[in-house]
Length: 115
Image (tube, rainbow, N blue to C red; front, side, top):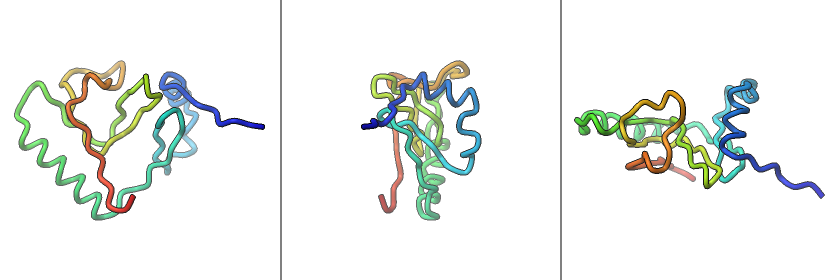
């Protein structure tokens, strides 16, 4: 009997670095609870809400301590997850060597019109 192959965040990131998912460039893939999940493209209404939220966040948050991110990875190692929420407010610092961790996040918003 076979079992699903579960990935850690480190394994998932290594696979991305090696180009393991380049052939899937049209599919939006996330690591959720150790499983690869395909995130559907936003509907026009969802895209409108995401754009409106991001516009609000950029205009409203005049602070050097908050960064506005949209559909970028967050790293939740203990949960074997690297979601890409529609909006995330994080501590404003350089993430050139790692994605923001749970303790770096102030707010996460995921928009869903249907699911």
